[in-house]
Length: 440
Image 1 (cartoon, rainbow, N blue to C red):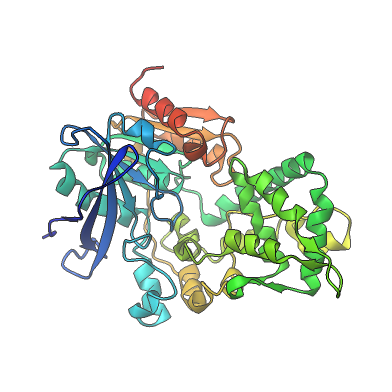
Image 2: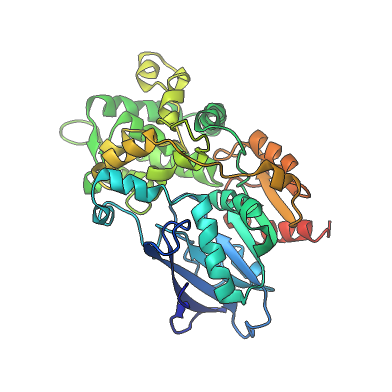
């Protein structure tokens, strides 16, 4: 039996009233009487509104491995949602305040093998079962609307398969998953997108070609140690390409590069400011679960391990070979949205978890996350924002999924990048709500 939730006292920010909720759920929902873990969620209601008659909207953050965004007041899409909803910002299991997973907590599980067994319960199927455990405690059994950003959209798609009775509607932003593609197939589609993002960046900032090459050449002979001990190699520097998938990311990368070097008595050196800013972008200290489980969100074949798919596929895309690039005169290509074995050597937040990551990469016995037959018979109103040439989620694969979900309505746009629900905020949410209500 699930204990009743506990709620902290309500408190205020500008224009909103917040309430903390704490729950316990089964680690393995197939064993409800087994080990339990803690879940945290923050309820948000517009100031001056009686929350009792308001329908609930559950927000599932992108990732995997990120807690729900810590809004201040009515930022981004939240202000629009609060016009008609009581919003629940859920820290998915392993993130934020929900039994967090990191190098400090995982040793409590015991050996790396036990840690890997534990982390196998941190996919979309478990997150949806968590939501279904929480829902009746908050809504009295009434269904709610789910808003899923990126990986949160993967979870929302699984929700449509596993518990559609719990949903009034599903709103998905940049997060329609491939229903059957393997991790390797996902990354085969990702590297060409990354090439396009690199070309677009260098077309906008041609001076960055020499700047990026200069940094890479310096690191090839002198890997830098960032604050906290992160080892900045050429490959790690290339992974700054993850910035190229968000609205202002190309500009952020440009500003990083323009201040990379300073003169010193020993010659040009990477500046402390550059290294500090690079560390803020690359460190996994705040979201180690992303690195640990990133490839297993695509694992659905019981017989096939993910096997460091992004690393294996990269070998077939020579434009990302930094050593070959530096022998020639072409631009250095940045990578993004991929996790590699060397991440667990470079980052002190991940290094103690290297063996656990290897065991997860070799793991088999995965179960499918999506049911095409149930999606083809879907009766829940669904709307999805699909971003043209999205770096993080392949557009063609997303549209194939959209066609497979009965009644799903898409809004395909190049007005926003992957973070459109943040940068576009109220407009994106308003468009999706109109789609599920047939108001367009």
